[in-house]
Length: 158
Image (cartoon, rainbow, N blue to C red):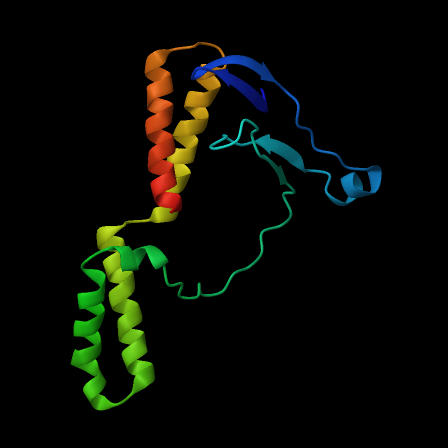
């Protein structure tokens, strides 16, 4: 309902709908199903706005491998890669070795971190629900839960 919040001593005192989405007639003809969505706010006193255009979904091929920098923060990742690389490079085929490293990395990710993107969406959904409830009541328990969710989301984003 609101897009801007002013906090005083950690309490919400003022909430307004300040932020807007603008378009013109030509754009609306191109995207007749478009709508704006107010997302939860994290570090700013403004909520981000997301415009969803609802075009036909793109057909996607196989998802490319993406190295996640967060893997390197885990103490077991580097030894896993070293062990995998040392165990397979004896054949001298770099492509095969890299494919096995990729498989080991993906398996490590699913065991240690799980689906980070699903976890992020879940935390954002919970945070948004708490923030909507806080628009109508100033509950200390809800504020504490909001801060916990923000911290967890910041950890995932890092």
